[in-house]
Length: 83
Image (cartoon, rainbow, N blue to C red):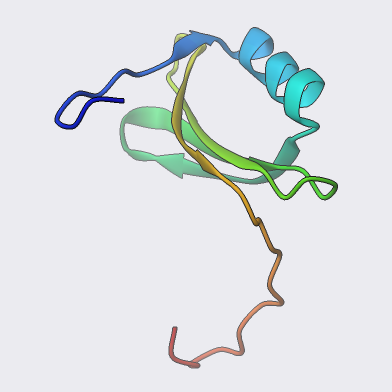
């Protein structure tokens, strides 16, 4: 991608989720509610370590926000522990 440009990939949620599963073996690992009633999800594959973060609007449009490799699940930190 050229520096200074940004291309957002968006589509119907069911199609995006199917592609993440079929192409990369990624399954939803966590979910949260963002401002303006949007849902943020983290998808990851235990086999390959690939991961993708998506955001879904109320109309069902899902956009890819970030992706990468070497996903690792960490145990919960104790309450009050520094990040």
